[in-house]
Image 1 (tube, rainbow, N blue to C red):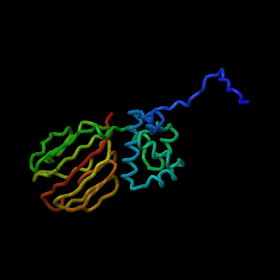
Image 2: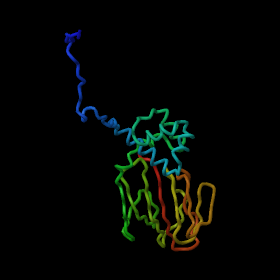
Image 3: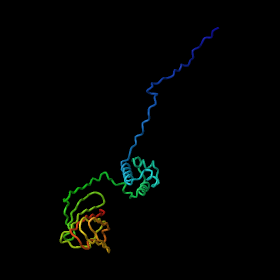
Image 4: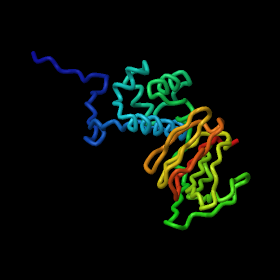
Length: 223
């Protein structure tokens, strides 16, 4: 006797087929990195100073006591370094920490003076027959630089009591003189140079050969 099959009271479940466009694995999009403008500027300064010092990233990381990956992230502006980290980097680069915050990209001062077109300047307290020709001038930055072409006219006399703040660099173009700095006296001729702290008394003590001309550059900090 054949047994009859009784229909199941439960509905038959058929597998649900989804479109391939849904089941296909989609590549994960990289997260968008939001960079801080200040972090990017500091990172660019760190990289520029490192490149100028001809130091590799690994070398700077080692001397500064930070990881190479952290240094890479700092230079790319992905992280804002702490003050302690900046101090370590400054020590590794042998620069003050303030160098990381200078905005070099915005410094646009540039001066070009053609031959013979310097500005004749009547300096306060200038000695008679010492002709000063200003060769350039910059407005930005905390360093004030005064480049002069100094020419001693025929009636010029020796003068050894120049004294002022800053550093002074002299490069002699012609003539022979004896130059005094404090208690020291040196014979100076064309091609010779001097660099000294200008707060001490200084100047030409004797003139041996004329004409005398020299480049004088004074460096002082702006107040």
